[in-house]
Length: 472
Image (cartoon, rainbow, N blue to C red; front, side, top):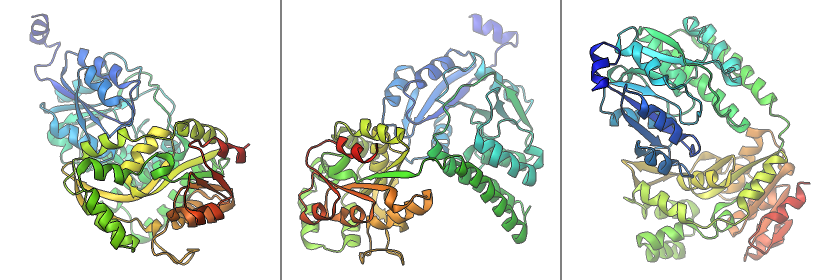
């Protein structure tokens, strides 16, 4: 009754808003954000879209009273789009799930100007110091290409509000470029944009490993829109690309002190079993799997045929299986120690990216390279794409058409790390080339004689601690 009285006085809106929170591994804060949003009299529903977190984010959000969805495709932009489509109300407020100190009126501050028709698009600004990508990439490019937007204090802020109908007309990039892309699209459509002060925000800083990727994706989103608007000629675009590269280089320079890398295989190395074997047993295609293995010696063909066995398996079932796979007990601890000693740590696997990324989150690695398993409508299509960094090139040290060692060279160039400063850990014949090429090659609980012969270190117990001997 009290809310109706305030509504009658015009102090509360007659139309409720939907709050959408895209999240990834935010178990410590997501519950608090959900509870804060639900307390607002402006809110009709809270939707959390989980980007397949490896922790208890899903459970925490559900326990706090949100409607929780599992994203069908990895990436913030897709999660935002899914949340929007699932919403019941025509006014949307997007909040980040990793912020533990939102002010109590954050939703009303963002939604009120939309509900009162004071603007078409509201974007939060806050007192936290802008990050390196904002200052070194986003703002300089905006000042050149979209000067009307250069004055925004936090152009990469993900806290926004707008009508659903308006948002559906914008392009949601599925990477770090999503927030700047939405801002530019709103501007290009002639929207009334209002920057809303929401107090001080203390959110997690991006890890250094993400900064290069973030700067590339942010600049790509800006340049793409400049090309669409025909702001740039080809000559001007080349000039801007040079400027962008210089901006990204300034970020890279700030992380040059990290110049070593440790790479782990996944199946029977980080994991105490093979994912595809577990999947075959769970989904009933073990006989077909063994038949492919016994009759198909060509890696590319076998990879395609095995992926087809997963057709129609639901994404949720696949990730539930991955969640139950046993990991070497001290994997996360050793990886944490390696990172504290200046190592970039990654997974290079001939399995699938969805699973490798899931395990990467669990053990705290920085990246994962694996084959891309296609998922549509939350189910596996049976198609798989082998990324080019696995494919033989002029610099390949072996004759294999597809080999992990090619990914090693790709990573050495990407991170500007010498092969001699890399550690590679594997267990099977498929790891021989990468173990041989790395500065330190480790055979981990391997029964393969060739791998054990080429390795600098042979570990026979299910523990990675001996690797740390090379890093003191």
